[in-house]
Length: 361
Ligand code: ATP
Ligand code: MG
View (cartoon, rainbow, N blue to C red):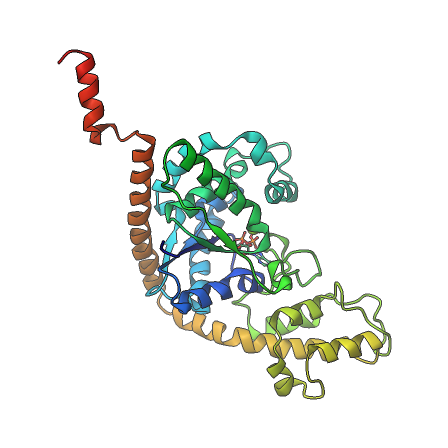
């Protein structure tokens, strides 16, 4: 069986370092590993509209931002198909048929959707499209027969929902759809990177992000004002590591070689943490170190972005080509789905013959 990747992001803003460690970095590694037959990367504009109907222009404007972030991180259109969800109308058709395979009660149990409804104050007035987006996500994944979906931890309930739809479809009709596996980060802190304010998740909607496109200066400012340990007032005070965002980010970004380069008096992160816990290590020193580490990772991304920004029409061209390729694959799956559902009436010579026989022709 082919190994196929599908994943994507909602164009609700520029991408941030949470996306990067949660999914984007891994995608680039997988794309370059040569182990996958195909990689599809989707800008989920239709999904983003489900909870942004008051501001559709925001979605339209951010498509190019997400595409620039993709390219600057190393997603390569020669190796990955980059496309826009709304341009593949086959996805809507699949969603419509999958809706029959899912109950309202099942959708209501989805913990990520529950949390998102709360966060958006949708309790009294959930748009139907938002409520059903896990079904549309199942269409996105299965249209490409994806085997592997690299995502952050919050997406696990969506993948589980997709797997259930696949099993149900294949049992009711025939084995057409492929059950995907989620691929979540191995490093636990990367599954859900907190915001710079220490809140549970860095999220475009919460305004607590370090963006991939932020200038070096902005990144530094954000790091220097990051949430640490509120009880660590004096340098000499013993400090806490747990819930201390600066250390969480070091867990996500820092390698042993960074110590040689930027903080040679420590051999590794364990030594640095031990000193902080003992007392005698100030936040500013740790933050300056984190700044070096993050700038090293972000600078090449930022520089590549500047190059890509010089030819915006070409970026749209890449997305158009990708959307054309994606449409071909989705159309093929949709045709198999309709055949399995036996709603391909005009291609079904036997049906036409049997019906004719009924009327004695
Ligand atoms: P929105 O607020 O519009 O939902 P978002 O910041 O949650 O935006 P998404 O486009 O919903 O971003 O998520 C894209 C991908 O990035 C998903 O795979 C998601 O799991 C992952 N992701 C998002 N935020 C984080 C984070 N803070 N840490 C790790 N992974 C994340
Ligand atoms: Mg989200």
